[in-house]
Image (tube, rainbow, N blue to C red):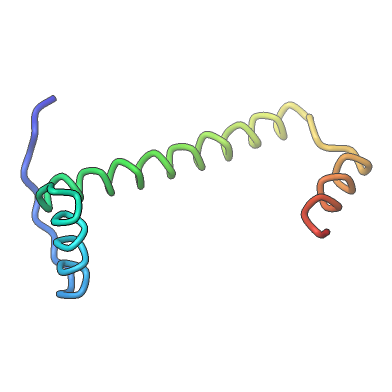
Length: 78
């Protein structure tokens, strides 16, 4: 995959934190930023995939029943 250069501005605290992480991992700042961007993109793709799956189910009329919703809420509110 072709690599391209981009420029971003970050405050000094973020840059220092990135440099500390890079030093602790014996890597350069670019490696750390690429790992962070990859994690960010994967998280957002996961969210979008699940949102789209829910929309597909809703459009197909596949909704959770009252008992299923109550069961889910009871797991979250213990």
